[in-house]
Image (cartoon, rainbow, N blue to C red):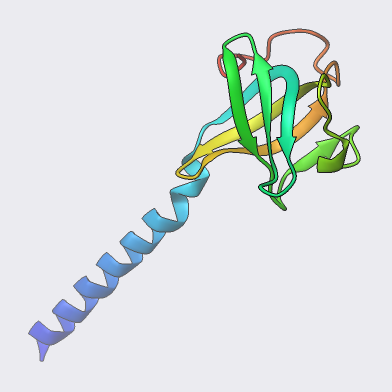
Length: 115
C-alpha cells in the first residue's frame, strides 16, 4: 500500500510541476517596445505592418490589445506614427499596447528593450 501511495504522490507532484510550467510559459515572453509608422493594415486578419528603424514588422492585434489615445484598431491608418509594446509568440508578434507617438515617454529611451 505504501508503494502505491508514494507512486500516486510522485505522479501528482509531477503533474502539478508540469502544469505550473505550462501556465507560466506565456507570461515569460519578453515585452518589447518599438516606435514606427503604420505602412498598411489588414482588417480580416487584424494585423498591421509598421516601418521601424530596424525594418518592417507585421503585428497582430487581439482582444487583449490596449489602445492609448486611439479609438481602436480602426484608428490605425497609413502614415500614423505609433509606439507598440508587443510580445513574440509562436504565431507571430502580438501587440499588448498601441499608442500614438509622443505619449508620455517624454522622448527618453525606456531601457534595453526599446528599439
